[in-house]
Image 1 (cartoon, one colour):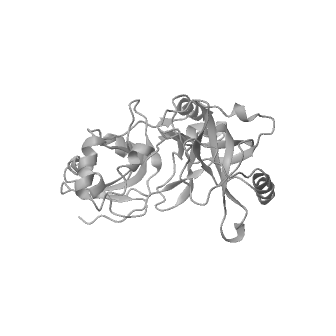
Image 2 (tube, rainbow, N blue to C red):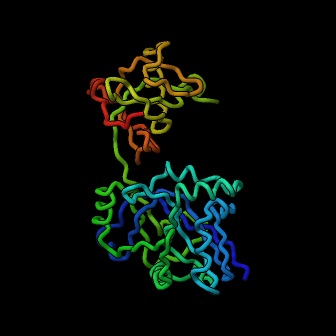
Image 3 (cartoon, helix red, strand yellow):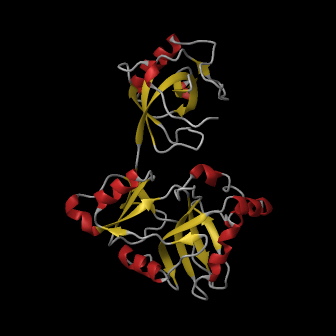
Length: 323
């Protein structure tokens, strides 16, 4: 059977639904992985497509057995490919070593033995026939009825109502966030919909600016990104670059401060490899927002919040892993 191409429905960033509407929504853990649509035509095979529509089946050979799970029933399953750490949490840094290997199947097989992936399933827009016009609550019931649980895939439970408790639980367990899905919502293929709301658990960090990179084009000569670090073991460790979060006035002000603090000596130990970096005396403390950290201690998806003139440079200490 030839299955239709269904691009994934996307969630819109937002906040929890109003308390009065809480019972009209389901809540699922937001996963930190690669979005995948799994096509099972009913002949024992499986085709995996990325959010872009690209065929990535060869990158994840351990998921090929999924094609046998439903027998001759053709289906399209929506989910997320993860690599789990020792605590059972998604680790995007580990996943990066598995992504992009669709063109190198032999290498993908070796990596699968070293770092297996896990496919989390959360929707079924096609099961024998199209289900995209059915409400979420009925599609979810169909998915759970399939009982899809295997060595490399699972169908985690969704919670109806109790959104604030669900969000708090993701924060307490160090998870990326929460996805809120309206119970009566249809599957809006390829659309970023308000019927699905994603909430990221963002954390703030105090960091020390040790350098910057000028922008390009209209930002030439002005701030493009700041290079930030935190004190650990009596030295300044580089933890990433921050390139978003300013308005134009803040960009202009910060550029002037960085130019005035310029130095020829890199304050980071070890020196990061950043093309076009300009070093500054590490005396400006800033506050940034980020999602998680990599295993090496680097900030993931950081954005600028504000300067912290009330803090001394020594206040930017952190418990970072040893290099």
